[in-house]
Image (cartoon, one colour):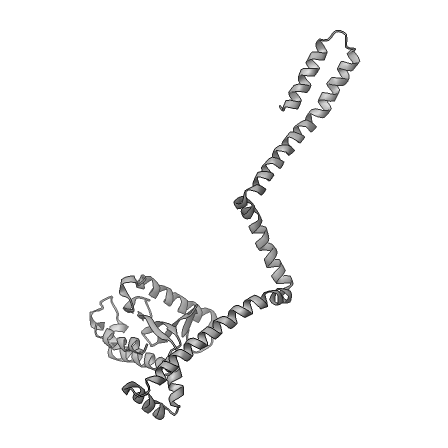
Amino acid sequence: MTAADNSGHDAAAADSLNPLRPAADLELEALREILLSQYRQRIAQDEAALKALEQRINDKDALVATITPVLGDAIRVKIRDSREEMVEALYPIIGRLVARAVSEAIRDLARTVDARVQNSFSPKAIGRRVQAWFSGVSSAEMTLRESLHFEVIEIFLIHRRSGLLLLHISRDPAVSPDSDIISGMLTAIRDFASETFGRGQQGSLDEIQYGDRRILIEAAEHAYLAVVADGIEPAGFRTEMREQIMRVESEHAEVLRHYNGDLTPLASVATSLQSLRMRA
């Protein structure tokens, strides 16, 4: 009961004890108490709610937590219903950021090419010119291609039927993720893609991309090779991957066909697969 209720109740009690007050006034006062008590309670509840709301508004963290879900939904609805308006509104900001990033990338590429041209009389540069001549491209094009970043991060050799890991080569073995789990996931992804999207078609999943990195996949009958790479692979890298997996398949066909978990017969494979990292 609020202070207003207590005061009203005390007044009514005092009036009931006053012998000079008419009985009709006492009954009217009692009726008024019955009718107005619920409104007094509601007013007290509203005052408490307003006080709590005022505290939340003054509390910045609580206000952000309250508005964020609603604001997120409003933005999604606005983007869905007014896509063109949102693009026009965001283009000056996003366009400037993209242009700046592209300009910086071009400047970095120009610096790299310039550094290579300045060293054009080195034995490596002469070998590049000979390679360019045999490849039918100009020396400048060969220099530009070598300026593009490419690095092999991980190499996985995986048994195709069981999904078991046969061999793992990492750029940094100390921080390498759980390779057995990755090999199982790659096999599951390949099988899912083949069953879901490859019905009635020849071929299989040959690439998975996430962010700037890609997983390049080349498969043979009993095993497949998965190379996690950063950047753009040079010409002939896919061919070398295919040759490597076919060599493994040819030299170890019986081991792969009846694989029992013994990796000893496949120990020599690591040496040949290291050549893929040398291409980086």
